[in-house]
Image (cartoon, rainbow, N blue to C red; front, top):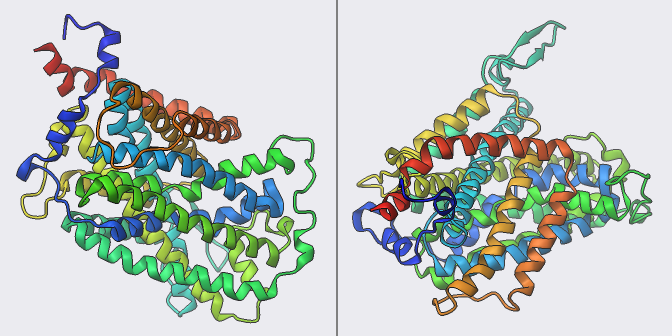
Length: 490
C-alpha cells in the first residue's frame, strides 16, 4: 500500500472475474432462488408506494398543474434509459450490490464508495421515512374501527402532541414504525424466497386498489379541471410552465425509486443474464402506465390548486365520488404499498452493505452469511436497529428530495458505466445489450442531470453534507482495509 499513489488507490477497480468468483463462493454466498416474476414483483413492490399516493398531488399543486402527467412521463424516460443500462451491467455482473458493484468494476473504488454510501441513504433512510407514514395510516385505520392508540406511542420524542382536552405532551416513540421495521427485517433474515412470496401477495392487493381507483374515478372527472393543462409560469423557476414540469419530474422521480433495487438481487436470481432485464424493465413499464393513469384521474377529479398543502390528496379526490367505501380501500392500498416498499428497500440495503463488507470497505463482520437461511443476517440486523431508531425516534419530513437526488446520481454513474465497459471490455458476454450506445446512456445522463439540477439548493446542500460524512468513513477505514487494495499491494 505504501508504494501505491493516492490517485491509483482511488481508481483501482475490481476485476469482473473476481466479482463472479465471489458470487459463486459455495456456502459463503447467497442462494439463487428468484425467477422473472419474483423480480417484477420486487420492482412493483418498491415502486408503488408513498410517491404515488402523496407526491402526485403535491407536484400538481405546487409545480406542474394537470401537466404532472408529462412530469411522470419525463421521469419514466429517465428511469427507462437508466433501466436499460442497469440491465446490461446486471447481465454482465450478476452479483449483489447494484450500482455500487458496477461502479467498482468500471470507475474505481472511490466512485464505488460514493455510490454505496448514496444507496445507504436511499434505502435505509427511505425505509425509515416510509415507516413513519405507515404508522400514521395504520393508526387512522384503527381509529376508524374504534381502536385508539396512545398518542405518545405514535410520535417521536421531538414531537409535541395535542390531546383532545387541549393539553399537549411530548411523544415517546413511534411504536408501530419500530414494530413494522423489525417484523420486515426478521422476515428478510428468514429467507429471500419467503420474503418475495409475501411481497407478491401484497403487490396484487395494492395494484388492484390502484386499478379500482382509476376505474371508478374515470366516471367522475370534470373536464374543466384540465384547463389550463400547463398553467402559466409565475415568474419563478419551478412554479408552473415548463420549468414547473421539470421541477415536478424531479419531485415525482421519488415515486419511481425502487426498480433499481431489483438489481441488488442479481446474486440470488436464476439465469440472471436474461431474468434481470425482464425484472427491471418489466416492473418499470407496468408502474409507468399505472402512474400516468392515476395522475390523470386525480387531477381530473380535483382542481390542482386545491391540493396545495394537502397531505392526502387521494382521499380528497375520492370524496368527489359517491362511494365512501373507496376511502377505506385506498387506505388499505396505501398501507400495503408502504409495507412492500419497506421490504424491498431493506432487502436492497442489506445486499449493498453485504457487498461493501465483502470488499472490506466496511467491517468483515457484516459479510457473514447465515448457514441455514443463506442470507446476510448481520446486515439485516444492523439495519433493523438503525432504521427502527430513525423511524421510532426521529420526525423525518424532508428526506424525499434527498433520496431522489442521491438516486439520480447513482443512475448517472450507471449510465456512464455502460459506455466505459463497452470500451474496456468490448468482448465480455452480455445477456442484454443497450441499443445505440453511447446515445442511450448519454441521453440517460442528460435527463437525470436535468432533474437533479431542477431540485432546490437545500437538497443539494444535504447531499454534500451526507457525502462528506461518507468520505470521512472511507478515508478513515475503507481505503486502508480494502481487499482489492491489499491484494494489489501484495
